Length: 450
Image (tube, rainbow, N blue to C red; front, side, top):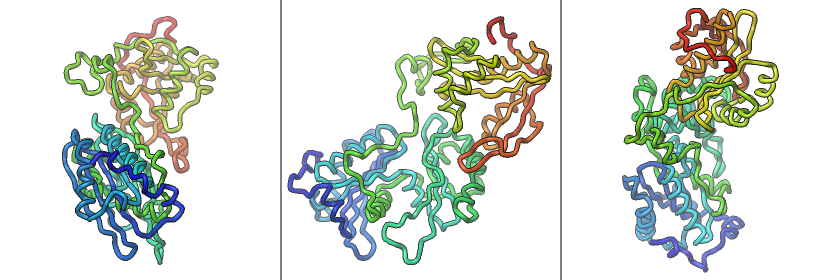
């Protein structure tokens, strides 16, 4: 069944469905955000529970060729023609880049051909719907994003009002889907749980869902926490959630259909793959910190520095902050490989210590020694200036950063209450310090290195 075969000029237009919504609903749903290819047909006569039929196939390279034949089979079994459909739904991700485009593109093409609306459903919400267990559990949905990273979202069921209006929102979004390192998932979620409980107005516990818990068991130890099945989104659940959106009047015109991407970098150039990026197993030596040149930060660096800061920080410094630091004469350096910025840091001298104000490393070259090299440069500057040590602040929720600083000899010496802005209110800061005299340093910076 090709998309062009679904184009029926006599079908009602999208405007007709929006202007005259019906309690009767025939809805086709596609879900291909993972290696599972799923199609579901939901039929709702307006009385009683809707009927949902589903077909699934495992195989990430076959989504495009199987999706429409599976849809055709479901329609034939139900005795329906394409013109009987009122809407088309799709799992919009996040997930596999190619899979998301397939589901979105097919849903959009079918909807345009039939003149019906589309209903995008976040794939993580479909997993949360299947994992529902009462209203006191925050469902933490973690789906494998490869490269030791996770697509993470959090939801809590809303208590159902009496009587529950048709299409009433059933979920509160605690955290929209984001990309996060696998080893940061549980520390981050445990830190956020108190704020989520305040937001929901009741004490919440954590309930786990998604396939990343099996993909990264060492980085994401789930012992002692309840975990739900299934681990990946299903087309039938996408269909049920889309029905709820239909009843709320949340359908979209087909031209507004779009996948949900949360990974900035979805492809690598030939040159990048030659250096080992993008998971190329045949690449030569991967880049290391010493492939980058350490040099003083200047005004010419500020565009790249500000852009990198915005990528790695939820509440980043502005360009004006960096300009002020340079004007004040604060020591600052960058790591560059040609035009590529690998990282940077800014110090503020004080009478007996040097304060590390900000430090960042580009996401695609983390864990290759760039952060250590920047901290060692800070230590060399401190030793050369005759101060006692390096001082810095770190969020308690930033478990990976805390472990990084501890490995480099930093120890907590204080706590600043409500120091950092956060998504809900303020977050404390741990004050860490390292003795300059006890550091293991690279060579001291040469003249002009800041």
